[in-house]
Amino acid sequence: MNPEVVKRYSAPVPRYTSYPTAPHFTSDVGPDQYAEWLAALSPASRLSLYLHIPYCVSLCWYCGCCTKEVRRYDPVGQYLPSLHAEIEGVSRRLPAAHSVTHIHWGGGTPNILSPDDIARLAEVQARHFQIGDGAEFAVEIDPRGLDDERVTAFARAGVTRVSLGVQDFDTKVQAAINRHQSFAQTKFAADAFRAAGIGAINVDVVYGLPHQTRDGVQRTIEQVLALRPARVAAFGYAHLPSRLKHQRMIDETALPDSIERFAQASRIARTLGAAGYVRVGLDHYALPDDPLAGNTLARNFQGYTTDTADALIGLGTSAIGRLPQGYVQNHPATGEYVRRIGEGRLATSRGFVLSETDRMRGFVIERLMCDLAFPARELRLRYGNHAEEILQEAQALLEADRDRLVERDGEAFRVTDRGRPFVRSIAACFDSYFDEGATRHAPGV
Image (cartoon, rainbow, N blue to C red; front, side, top):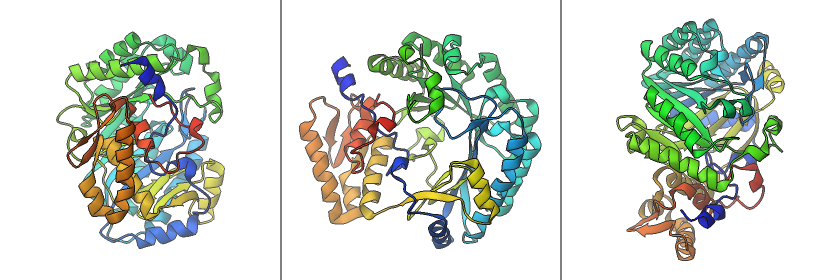
């Protein structure tokens, strides 16, 4: 790839796990509106649940999640009753006949929970929501804080998939991001979950970290391959120290430039492709028999997913939900979240009401991110004459494209293989809100 092309598309752009993206949420949406949206859901709605655990034993300096470091279990134990109460309060406002098809516990570190609290949270979840047969139940795992008792608790809770955080196995990189984790710890986690009957193992890695090189990330991927995960997610590090104070601990002079970042991402793609993994969207990879490698693909706040539920219910501090009318987000401060739930209220602090134009642009951006294309015919069927605005923009982009990143394929507007690494930048061309504040996003490559 021409270095000038890489540099041209390296400007910060959103990851597009939602549209509009979270920085555009406002306080105009609050608890009352969320309650109305929950009550208005169809009884036949398929629901997805996201539960947030905002605690870690130690804070990784690269992290962009809503979490805090705790050395004692007391804050965790004090948080859980509020999470249980929110589960009960939200379920009370839902139509009785709903069915949950996907569950995801994230954080933070969900396996910071004690085995008893894992069991109790799963029981509260199952008591207040109708979990459908065959529902996927995924949990994010930090292998450093895992033991046999927690593995057993997750298996008994009904977990079907786990995502193991790795990031990088190079000790110099680990020291630079304050995350010391051996391959042996990670292998123990994968082996223990498989022995407990949880065979769907995901692994998360990150490129663009301080001191990383393309040879180094390849060595990490080769170690990951020894675990034979069903999926690998390779995220590009977003250095945002003005917003995330702990990232100021990272030595900026050790960060790779845009050309090296691109080379690292390319090396990961080639290595996983040679090992038989199917590339999914921008930065996910799956074994051919994994559902993510099939035809049904969506994108939400956890990245690429097979979750096509009608609504996402976010539970816990900072959790984001998506309903037909728009987005809602709980208060990000744990103390305020606990106070609101303790008063019997919903903890919603902001959100966004979707217009029909927002839905149309969101559809186009999601299809680009997932399928690297959007079909003109389906766009017209869904949105009628309003689709012409998007199609005219797509045509203008085609005519202005000097780098051969996009093409027309029959009725479809398609991203080329050459354009795939820059799909976020291409998607941003259809984002009517992308006009300021770009420095709050991750680099385009």
